[in-house]
Amino acid sequence: MTLQATPPPKTVVVLGVAYGGIGALATLAKLLPAGWRVLGIERSTHAHHVYVFPRFSVLPEHAPRGLVPLVNAVYGGRVTPGPDIKPGKGAADASPGTEHELVRGVVTALTPTSVTFALPIDGEFPADLSGAEKRTVEFEYAVYALGGVLSAPSDAWGGGPGRDVVPGRGSKPGAVGFIRAIHDKIAAARRVLVVGGGALGIQFASDIKAANPEKEVTLLHSRARLLPLYHEELHAAVVKRLAELGVRTVLGERVLQWPERPLDVDGSDKTVTTDKGTTLTADLVLVCTGSKPNTALFEGVDAGAILPNGLIHVEPTLQVAGRRHWFAIGDSADSEGIFAGHESYAQGSCAARNVLRLIETREGREATPLEEYKAGPARIKVSLGINEYVVGTADGATSHDDGPADIHAKLMWSLFGVEDKGDDE
Image (cartoon, rainbow, N blue to C red; front, side, top):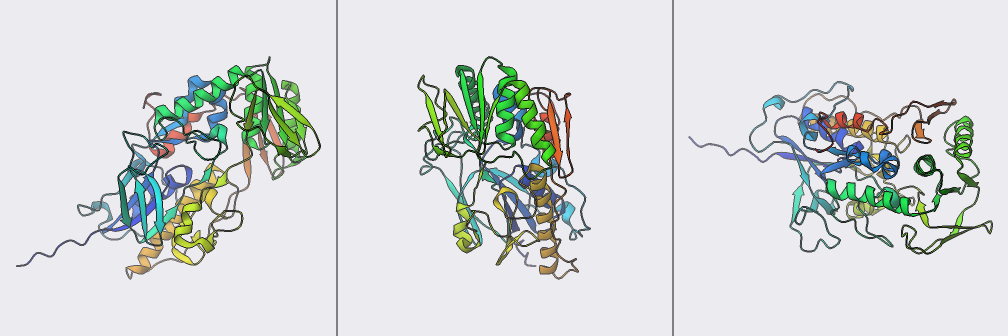
């Protein structure tokens, strides 16, 4: 009697395991049929809860709470209810070799059916990865969840033009060290200029001034109205609170000339010149002008799917246009909805459910039609000092004064299946 070899598992890859990737990874790990596995690839040991980074740059004792352990992400991550999916027979007791996995690596190259990633060198990722061990994995389906390149004051990775690589990047000590380094720069500066009036810039300016009333803090924004996606009451509430704190607000002026190294606090004046001829001088300039889509790697799959704005063009099902086995979510995709963590998570879950439907069809089982992603109502919460915050929607805005110093950062941990056992995890 000849024993037949067990065929190798078929693979779904999830590239990036943060707000969006965890939704895809957890759903697939729970519902993939036998003979399939999900492989998550994430460069950091801990997910970066970047929405609390401005606060923790002012109150660095809370910094560890903004780094979410990924140890339980595969089997413990939260799975939200969705349209019925029928797991294949044997999904609960997969064969050896089909175990789902999350590996730490930096994606270096993509093709339509493969991903190559570099492994860490002595626990971290230096600027030069030429000496790193690399692995290539073939896959049947992929979810692109690599997000965006963050504004420098919140980017605990670094590198790129005018940016130093963050020491220990990709590790929790490296990220905590980065947050503390931003705090030290803020502490050393007497005058701080925040450029960019999105939620990130508003939170930096208000938190810095609330915690350091003696500092000169200016918020500069290119538009006359803050957060225009929401009701005008939100703009009014933010401007009012900034004035109460003593933050100088300059609206409707765009930067034409930047200092060479805005994050350096070295005793020299950092000067910014606007299109209205205004000159602003500070010891520290925090550039909070938004993230940029992290989509350059997708050129190896289909450069034509990348729009002029850098986003990957997706169908309502979150499938990449012209690449039906690829999905793109979050800040990398031109999907419906705002760029926010909760939308990314919902998109990751939706993409995973659609992968499962495609597998059902592929394996000859009755499948439901693919799901079209529908964004929820636009809603935002913006901190305006240590305890104050405002919640804005399309219909209005409400102000509050009961926010905790750590902004309930650890509520995010449960999304990744982590029980709160302290800040040292």
